[in-house]
Image (cartoon, rainbow, N blue to C red; front, side, top):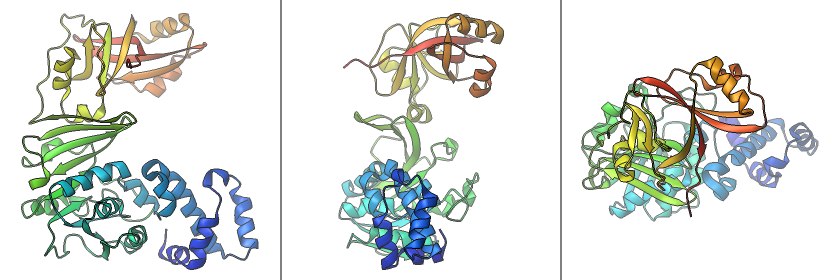
Amino acid sequence: MERSELVDLLSPEGLRLLDSLPPWDNASDVVRLVSDLRKAGHPQGLVTAVLGQSRLRAKAVAKFGDFAGRMLFTEAGLEQATRLNVAALHAGRFAAAGLNRVADLGSGIGSDSMALAALDIQVTAVDTDEVTATVASYNLAPFDNAAVVHGDAETFDLTGFDAAWLDPARRTAGHSNTSRLTRPEDYSPNLDFVFGLSERMPIGVKLGPGHDRDAIPAAAEAQWVSVDGKLVEMGLWFGVLAREGIRRSALLLGRDGRHELTAAADSPDVETVPGEAGVPGSYLYEPDGAVIRARLIGDLARSMDALMLGEGIAYLSSESLHETPFATAFRVLESLPVDEKKLRLALKERRIGTLEIKKRGVDVDPAVLRTRLKLHGSESATLVLTRAGGRRLALLVERVQPPH
């Protein structure tokens, strides 16, 4: 969204028009809607702005629920914004630590600042982009204890603040069509500044879940967060925001509530399935991505009396079914040939026409393989391609619903 579009959108006419539009799901005939709005006398720039915002609001429901209909967004801002339920957990750390005045450095559209303000914390959101800062001002307008500053996070005066929250921009500048930055030194603010700030005050930092683990400061509590099975972030917590004795955490948020594994360090792996054949037990477990990234697979395996399927392979194997929120359980039905031609024949014999392919430790493109297998039939199945005992495995499995 360009500055001129935002000016149009924030006009009384723009906001009234935006709120009057039908839900985006019902606005399938965009061409007709544009025509109707233009016939009603609305200028083209305003029509473009409100329709774009209506589309973003609909997209934002996945992160913000009903609040999305009362917020403004940019394309890039929504992409990088913290989900509301995760932002609430971030804010809860500051509240529990008694930190009452927080600077949100690199605030984006203000989602974390909203969560902080909702807990009666005085928050100042700082963003270097004028359009983004203006959008944050709109989103934070309902909160008397929130302010927005258009400025540089690295030079912002932190005098009088108790703590800071930082979500460094990990994409190129702009409001749409941005690309991911791969070098931490290119983040804004950069990580040298961020980690230096941790020596001055308590801070929390949001980074991508695939961030280099070797670059995690020893003083930080690192928490990987998964929402409905999707790994969304790694949070680093310093000072009083870090929990005593915890340096690794896997937090899962889902429809059945909140579940967490914690440890003082990476957990050592357990033994692998014995024998050169590496024959798995009756049940195969795929740990949640947060557990894998936090390197707490060993602790999870010990809690279930399970073994690693193979060296460095993030699958667990057991003869027994264990209910756990930290892994998806599969019943192993049979072992199929690894050879592609024989595998195709085996799947044809079983009339499998729909195939989910999961893989670990093997160089296979599931989409390409699925095409080459020439599937045909009325049955559906899940195929696991992996390694164990020094050899490749192709396992036909079925998901197991946890008992209730």
